[in-house]
Length: 97
Image (cartoon, rainbow, N blue to C red; front, side, top):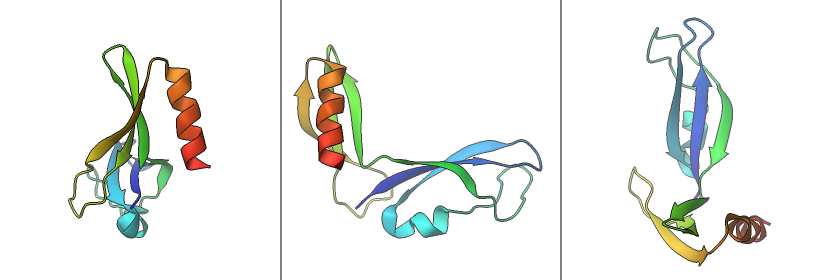
């Protein structure tokens, strides 16, 4: 499953927020009501695929993948660790290709 973070901006009140959702729920999260002024059907201006990510672990960089789970919160598992961020980015790019 894929995990997405949707970034929203409300033109009515200049409010900004984000929401996260599984791919199967991504269509439902593609529009939302503003939590500040209650404007209806605000669409995200950006969505990030957070299925594969890089996180720093001490001096190393780890490539993490979302675990297949039915939880409402993402749970990640480490795929590999690298000494340099560039190595982790190259590995991540190859995994996404």
